[in-house]
Length: 269
Ligand SMILES: NC(=O)c1ccc[n+]([C@@H]2O[C@H](COP(=O)([O-])OP(=O)(O)OC[C@H]3O[C@@H](n4cnc5c(N)ncnc54)[C@H](OP(=O)(O)O)[C@@H]3O)[C@@H](O)[C@H]2O)c1
Image (cartoon, rainbow, N blue to C red; front, side):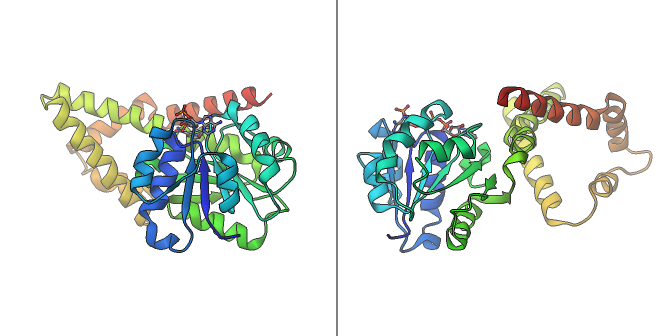
């Protein structure tokens, strides 16, 4: 079977993954991309990027070795059960469904092929996602493992995780964009308070996060040092940072992630 990648369910996340892969076309030369989804109109932007439309999951399975399942978590079992008769040991099913376990995926596929669990976050939509990957299925060959890692590495940063770490990953990174957007909103509000227009403020704050994130990712300098380098003694920045410290920003962020992790564990039970 050719190393094609197919997707079933091309809404926000499936559409983002397939569009991202299609845009990295050169990397996937010779692989080919195919997709099936319930509302045909959602395939149009993907077709424009060179993705082959399929009428059904079965058609995806006939031509694609790697099958990304990106329907809602509650739809995943039914979609996989319908697909199961077309799955062979050559296939690899990659589910991005939040909270659907490896055991549940294997059962829905009737044990026909290897399964991979993936937890993406929303910046995947702009090619800057962080993907948690559980590659623990013993049926996964070393070649398939490399292919799946390469596939998601083309869309952002990949972190291989045991399934037991998925809730923690979701609380920190899956939920992470919400924390970041909340912090951005506070700064945009501050900009408007200082008389910048909302639009100016938003544009400047987005660039501030992008630039700071690049520095944090590229440099080995410890974060407290990067922060202190902005704070001249007796200056304006240290006055602002002191206010953040008095409010306990670090502790608040730790509490937010722990609350999300606790809720995730509660939902698993
Ligand atoms: N969005 C995120 O930020 C995010 C983050 C982490 C994980 N995820 C996971 O990604 C998955 C998809 O989420 P989403 O936000 O992308 O949802 P979504 O936008 O609703 O996309 C789901 C797509 O699946 C299609 N679909 C439903 N049943 C189908 C079937 N039987 N055959 C083919 N296609 C079918 C839907 O068709 P219609 O267009 O007709 O409804 C829809 O386009 C979920 O499991 C979620 O847990 C999403």
